[in-house]
Length: 608
Image 1 (cartoon, rainbow, N blue to C red):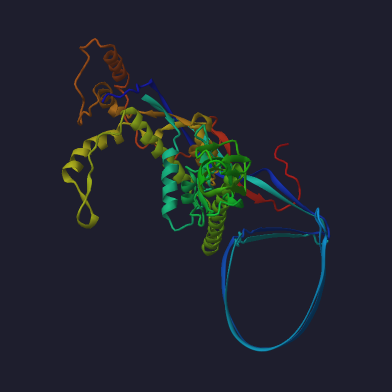
Image 2: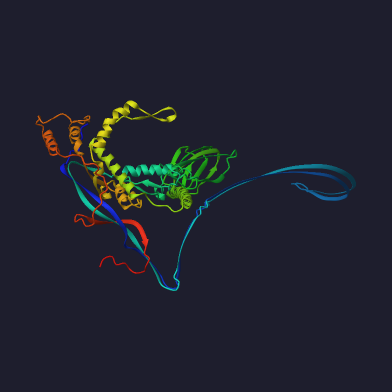
């Protein structure tokens, strides 16, 4: 594929050569003052505790008592009855009868006497046996559930900084350390120049470095639990951000244990009631339907019917504040409830032999119960994160103690090599519209041992040599642009970059880089041929294209004519000693992140 990046033209290659002269104390970084006789200590202690204890108790007590009582009675009853009766009677009378004739009158009298005597004896025997069987059953059920969160996570860190004033006042002056260079621009003649604007030049290095650190034995700081917001930006986790669809991913982030699934959005309670009354007497009963904790009874559906005397049967069922007539025998919905804990159920019937009822209560999860689940889940996740962070800090402290005194970062000269290699890779990728088409020269043999792919390696030789020799990579010039020209999602990560080399930090956090690289004079014709055709011309000069009138080829031929008398200068990366009296030489002062404690207490005078 033909390159899309065109050369910017012919220009003089001026390379800035510099000599490191010395390190100097720069501006004041900090002043520590201690008065005479003063003793000052700074002690920092960090203690984190989180407790989780779960207790569950269930008790069921059942008592069965049976009492069998037997009573025997033997009675002997004797009765003696004595009766003596004496009876006497006297009767007198007068009879008078009259008519139209003479009156008849007669008088009569009668007397009688009697006496009787009676004696009786009775003997009665009676045997009685009573058997009483009493049975008492007592069932007691008690369920007690107590949940106490007690997981002891204790991390203590103590830092002690002590200052003793002694007999005089003390003032410790800390100053930044700067590098001082002598620099001079050296002109190496005309070159064909290319310019590339590389986005985030340190992105690949940061990514690979993160993978390398993850694979090493050094501990890796655990990531703070977080979620993506509506703008697809990462933000710290809050209890409200815990949802049904992401809590498993959050648990996987930290390895939290004891996290319960979210409670269902709704539950349905169902219960059946029935009663029989052969005598059809008036009966009343009451019950309560318990609602699960954390739920609200929103609605219900009741189906009831009964059997009784047609003329006199009556029956009512009361559920909460709703009343149902048993005689209708129809299903009735109940709505607009907002009840918790329990629902009262009662009934009364008269002249009814039997009735039955089924009730279904539809309950929804209360907002408070769901928020409690969010809080519990959040607490478990953050407890696991704090535990992992504490273990990381312990392992890191142990590693630092074992390592002794360490030097941050690496040699700045090695950092400059990394910067140039990364910019070189980015420039070739942009110029070729793809990475140069080379086939793998190494393959995997038995047991994964690397082996040469001979044909590919030989075929790649000319392409690799061309791209390495085409440009004077050692004379690359680049300017780094601020972070805000890169991805906004990476801006927070740039704040944590601190390698000890401020120049390398600027490279890693740059949002873009402007790179100008010269073409080696002897390779100008081959580079222009690749620019026109997208193919690599073998060693030697490519065909003459001066006969064509293509504007691009005309321009390229003019480049060749301008570079006809320019030869390669080797080596261009040589170290140049700059004479301190050279009028073209300048002194450059670059800051570092190093700090030096000044030996005296006098304030520095940097410039008179």
